Image 1 (cartoon, rainbow, N blue to C red):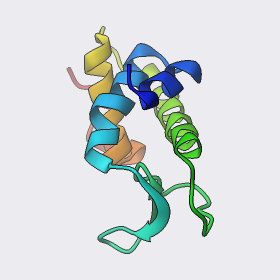
Image 2: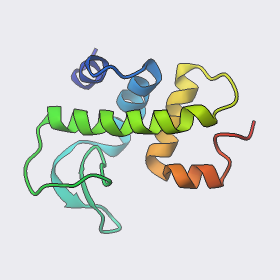
Image 3: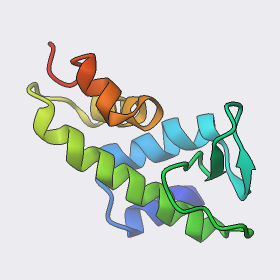
Amino acid sequence: MNSLQKKLVALGLSGAAVIAGVKLIAPSEGLVLHPYLDPVSISTVCYGQTGVKIENKIYTEDECAILLAEEIITIEERITPLIKVKLNDYQKAAMIDFTYNKGFEDGKKEHTYTDP
């Protein structure tokens, strides 16, 4: 079990949320411990976090794990009631990752969570 996985498990994330964070989000986003502007000039930090108040400081890996966990938990809480079919943890992890990258409102517009 890698360090991020241990942190997300310790923070109480579901199996699907841990899979999304460790296997999908973290590898594709990468970890940057200082604020930076992404390709479209949005202030970003850690594992691609943009929706948080970003302080001009060096973040620790623990702080970044907490920011990632908070975002994943929020996403999972929002999409779970909308999913009308049984998904295994890997399928749900893919939905979490999609929402992390695309955004909840865009996913709803495209009927991502409701169309079979």
